[in-house]
Length: 72
Image (tube, rainbow, N blue to C red; front, top):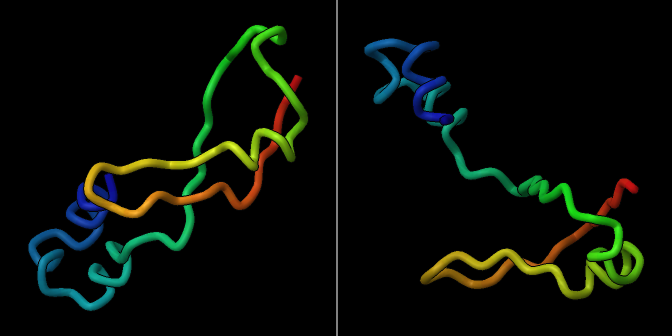
């Protein structure tokens, strides 16, 4: 997605522009949304969910959740 936006914004210079490279740099954090789930499936409070939440990417170290917000 970020590459497509950079190509649209910077055109032919997307591969050589320092500003485009900055826009394509890895993000320091992620926002992941899941759901909707029936209320009966949500067990525990946000702290319990945070303790168990992990982002797994094949071939990379796991990333533990820093924050969890639930909407009921």
